[in-house]
Length: 394
Image (cartoon, rainbow, N blue to C red; front, side):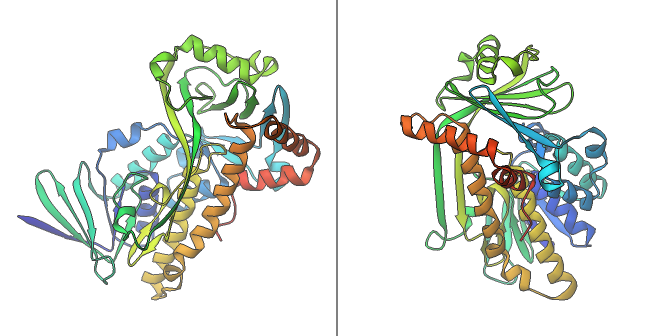
């Protein structure tokens, strides 16, 4: 027995990008169905990014889901780069007139779920065997199993917001899809702890023993990272070992304010840069991690996904409201221009702030020279600031 569901846009993936797209389309009166291979509790529990560009905040405002963000989020006017103990502050507001907002992706996801649920959004959780089909036709469909039943969603468009390991990108034929990838020879060991942040602004630190990042989720909850071997076992990193290594890399001045304590989340994430082209195939559109991955240096992953969604939303609304397919036809070209610029920035900052095992003494001196140039050049600092607060949509 097969159940058929009709909708305008079928969204594969109920993470923040899928939820944001669903809400923005709903605001324009466009119907969607959202499906995910996991359930809501699992999706909300995933610990991810925590720094939102101004454009991402604006997207949440457009979605009508920014009330708690503005109550609990922490606006930041700058951040610090450190190199062997020397610090340089990037004055975001002074250089660009903009700020960023510290607010966890988990919280953003909860806010969007609450709003979509309150408005009666059709969700299918814990689905299996998802197959997008007939993507080159005017009426594509998405087939999947849900609670033992075969379901077919017939729609006008399919939005693939299902992440790097999802099915959407794989639905593009291999002779059309091109991928570009850079695997970094290290990972990030991250912890969450219920302690006040060591600094009221983020600190990105390059030390001879490796990278460290002091971040936060609130005024009482800190998120800290250190560069580690990607093959390390989390079990080998006790809290005491982490704190000792983190303080050493942060430097004595910053570490003097460090409050240590037990961690309640600890994990190792590999670092990669990845881009898939094109981001449109027929009436399938890729958005977010299904099409691209950036290293977490600079906090661009979630923000890049939100920008994709805003551009895709504009294209779909223009099509449904005015019958204009121009933005649909140029979607892939538009987003990829921006994607590659953001990839460049994340690669640049990662290259500057990490210890690469293959680097020669010459390359290490080049890293130091780049840092010294940033310290002495307002133009160089402004370039970092412009990318950090977020590039224009197109």
